[in-house]
Length: 456
Image (tube, rainbow, N blue to C red):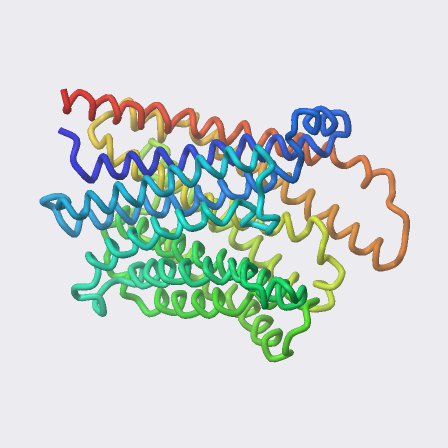
């Protein structure tokens, strides 16, 4: 018998992986625009970079939110072992329908060239209203279940709480451009847009941090970490960072120097807490490879640790004003964003997906081998290497571009022809991600067949 929890988790995992698949497709097509002949062919089909990039970023962000939501629903189901009531089911259906219809609308309209013209929120505001409405209903369900005894909850509940609320605030703020007194003043519009874009990323970072600690707790069976001092330090610094560090993206925009200094100091401080927490999580009892079998979940968590070191170190450099002025507007910023979302958020959520799939099939040895076998280790290695190659090239080429621009030097041949590195690394990354999907998706279809059999 398939339980309410299994149905909800399987459905939202399926939606998350669908969003990830679409992000892969549109990302790969976007990379092709770096090849002149391929770019011309795509343009002739009406698939310009102006359509493909917002599709890629929209579904990449949707994957991150949806994967976190799947884990949160799994947590909420444990708060009520007897299953959902009718009101819970109706809210779940409404929330899911809003995101499915909104996602389908974004896909169709962006391909047709209907866009807001905004960065990261390139779709029509009508779909924003759908996403927001669904999120509000999801938030109601979340707070309904965590409200009782809230102040005694583990730190991951606080992280999810701030992430859920912060999304609503920053999502509204990101649409301030629709107000005439904002849209008519380009500098004000730019200030709000970059601030909102930075803090919107902060909202799902808090969700990911919470999911990471919850995942470690479930794997280890040790509930003490969620109440530990270092975990609450991460919560405090994570909140402060999410609220303020947008400033290191807006050094070039007119704003008070107090904001810039706060952003700089917080960016410098975050590295100590995040690295300490990830180090502690990896050392926790049970978060390790057990016996001869390889643990994919542990592999993803360990990968996230190294990506965190690299990306936070890179973020510290980017936050230094003198370097920021050189690399701003280059591929360094793209590489850092991609490394953070794929290397940190992505690796944590790949671990989440693996854990949730395993909970849906707790007794299936063949499934366990499919997820945790040595072939999976090879996929994770390939994923990390291809992502590292892609991000490294973006960092190197962006730094070179910034320095050449600063010293007013011509672009050397190796840099102008280096787009092949970007294309090859990008496609190897896409192949690695598709290999992951090929292991997870058939299992979720199996869950759907079990549900159909139960209904019959």
